[in-house]
Image (cartoon, rainbow, N blue to C red; front, side):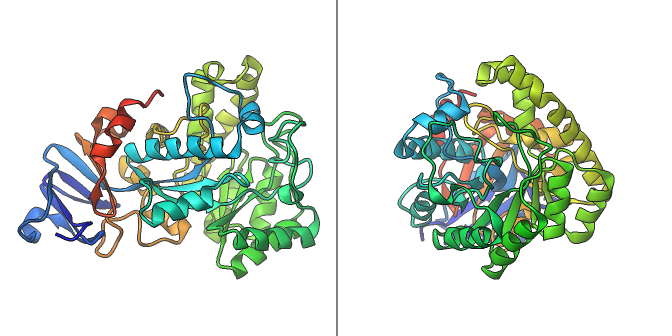
Length: 422
């Protein structure tokens, strides 16, 4: 048989929102789906490798639309985020990133949207994986963020860290230039800091960038067929981002009802990243945060939940993203985000949609996030009925098979699953 040929038989096949098939079949040829539906609806050619999914749920490969890949992967040696950024070499960061990527893949997340770090090599890792030279999830990369002097991102780094010319951009001309530079570096999308955050020396309510600067970033990116993701916690940051026409609001902690209505009208996506704050509130002091750091994040945690509810009520398109960040929000535990969505009002069907078809729409990648004919042959097989209990996705032992472009990677990911020290 041709590499990338496989059939997954039996089990409950979820092909998309509101569509499921008992005793289903997914047939993949040359890395792409050719059939997904009832097992009785298609014949598989003799000799095709078979996976038995009886007693399992079969899902499209899942998408996490907000991760920081090249962060600490060694959970036995917790390092504060600013220390890790300032003291670990770029090759060291990339090796941590590869380990994190393997953990995500072992958990059933076959695509990651990466908020990149300058000069670390995530674009090169993406290309290496795409060429079949390494095993990993599909990566969509912003080579580094765009931030102003004294903005979120600039203040991420400790004072002793050497800064490069394009680590900050101020004024419309520099903003235009940096988008073009990132496109030249191979950007899949643009990440801009539109508000403050929780780094030392800043406040989340501070807006970052004027509407004119943000609009220049969006206009330049869109001219190059690149979407713009805006880190925006504060109300002013969200408002300015919407005025500028960004494609997604990341976090959106201080969203209000009027802004939610505007997002729905404009078709702007929300990536809530609830898991990050959830991990920090539950286990922050054991993951590198001080007691004060946990306390500082408490309001943002509560407001993110409120914003999530307002967004859903307004009809905003929600896309799953965890803000996975090494020790603080561990790779491999991505499905906690989906579990939180269900805890706060979504049906399981809605939650799965945020990590499949809705995410694919944000990424402008109709070839992923579904099991329709012609889609990439990315599948996760989960023990038990995920539609009845979303938490089954959060338990590594339940991930029976991960198929990437028609290749069952379960054997090579087995050791990764066993080492998920989260």
